[in-house]
Image (cartoon, rainbow, N blue to C red):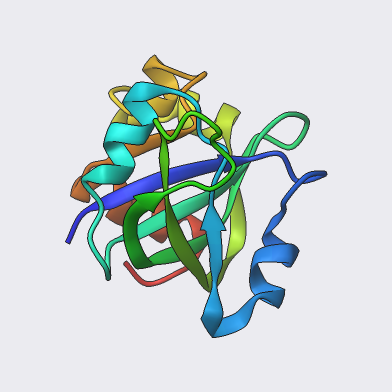
Length: 139
């Protein structure tokens, strides 16, 4: 299994919106960065990801899982980019802020820290376990 981080503006699409979609999940569309799109191409059904509220909150608030692999994104008129479908799994008991992650020596190599503008990034298994523990959820 691989692990990922999905950034979303909570005013546009937040954790509560994701949870309301239930088992049918929601397409993760609108990605217009080649590296983020390539990350989504690598995703497999069952992979899990952190749901990160960007902009003002800047914190991981929950866990999602991939329920449909990369396929065409109908919001891309040029047909270059794709999307995956994700389902909410579990909220964090304690959200983990970007400031918390930046201050944690174990997380200094995270893509979120090194490449903060990228909307979909990989997470190592060690980072996944560490962040889950800090967030009060099972890895």
